[in-house]
Image (cartoon, helix red, strand yellow):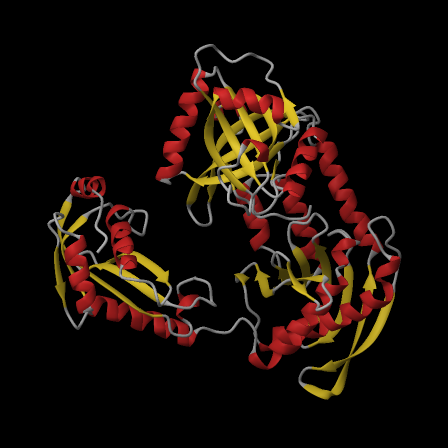
Length: 538
């Protein structure tokens, strides 16, 4: 039996013990449980729960593989003690725990020796039973994202839109009108998302006024979070968006990009709803089919600089009765496109050219890169200066008697590493490495954002670290101490070997570039705390 290390036992003994009885159990994830827990809907395995019977609070909840050993119960319990679920729940050590499995009871008794925790068994765990019953009811009563009888046709229509890829040629200002006169909807005004590569899809506004109002509010809000959120929620539209593209093999060795669509509705009184009811689904289905036919005929003749009048009329099968047809007209609206473009131009003229708003970009660092804060011995630094394919020397010399050089490591594949190096050089080289506080106001999570400042003044995100992560806290403390010793000089190392045996610890021959720069504090950067805001293609 694996036991806790002496250091871990001492750490746990220092946590205050409270007169509480906790229930703990692991149970199979039945269909619908994962979505009810906001977990991966395809997740398979078991759910572990630790519940404080006195406070009646869930202290830990984890999804684990069904074949995971009893160690997962210990790991989950330690999280319940040291890092309980919920922001207002404090670390605590219970006097007694009750589990619903005899083997788990004997195992925990052995592991938790010297922690003064009584481990008992009970065939009935009323609190956990109640929680699982509630989750089961939620799962069973969940309304599907799409009506079952419309789902197949809607997914087919969305896939056709994905293959049309109108965002490759048209931006969000190029508006199309889809005249349906179907159900309660007369005309939908379509704005295309994706030309800037942030989120692909379309917005189908139920009125032209809503579209223009949203555009005006977004431009007026700038980067002000509350204004953007209000503008976003005040839209009156259907939406079809696609997550990040994946690739599937065609059988001949080539790859085809594919993405999973999300359907939903936005309304000032309802807010955002990631689902469609029956009548809405039929309207969206007819509109998507008509758009696909229009794009097949006209998209090659359209782009951001050429958006003339084009009209297409189509007979679409009625979702209510396939024997009947719905006549739909799709047309471009060049006058509206020009009006929206002028709004953006007027906003730029009103903005102060001497004080442009900083933009934190996230398109420089390759996806799936490994990054970390660390240091290298001065002897290794001196060798790397001569072996690196690209070396940017610091403007100031390192102080004497420095043993370690603080550095950020970004490790990826060789082609992506060379692309990253070229991108930095094209941006005027690397000027500084910074860390700035950030927050996701929607999830209530706080981060420490790693930022690269390039010579052209741009800011690029290289990493997000949870501010409460003890590993990052310790690494950041060491980073600050080392930078203090080097008088603010630090470095960026770009290495290959992401998928090899040297992942996370590259050899000298794997290190392709070294940029020696200054380290900036959050105060020096002058941005203040950053907040995650909705991203739009404006």
